Image (tube, rainbow over all chains, first blue to last red; front, top):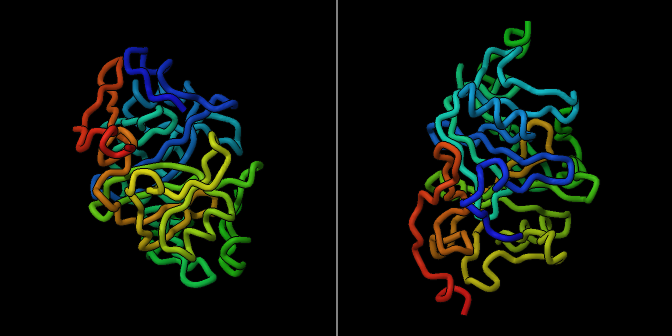
Length: 132
Length: 132
């Protein structure tokens, strides 16, 4: 892949995949990587204008305003892209301190131990209390 | 997507995409996200057995032993996956302190400023000195 052409308009400079998507990594202020999801142009534009992370739900095939059900919004502080412009990195403030639908701080809670993935982080809030 | 079934063997538990790939995020010990790339089963297995990050280069269609040309290997300290098991997060030690082919610490050096992506990190080493 060729390097990002930063003379281009910001949306045109990005390399969208065949489905019009780009992967997005959300990292909170402590440096914790809390989530990974996908964006299309519309969700990225709304993210920039609203200041809150908006993803594209590939399973539900619609805009996914993170926090719309859980209240766990993500305030976007900065957006970066990589050398070839095909991935986004969002610096976010995680409202409620919980990004994962399992009630954990981060979705990345399964750690490889030998031949198994084992949950390595505590559940901070019962999902039944989050999604009422 | 259904949650990860951590009773399964670690490779079977992961959700590989239609091309047999899974995205992988590399994060160094300072918390900096330095790279994003793709893995197939073979590259992930070699990563685990060798202790060094091995990706699948989609452009070159071959295993990409990170550092094979630059010397900038990534020692893998831990591997996590997310709630639904379709993304990997690698805790790495970045040999040489440079992950990016542009000679920067991280590939995520372009920051959105208004309507443009602007390089926000210094080049630590001239790429001509890295790839001789």
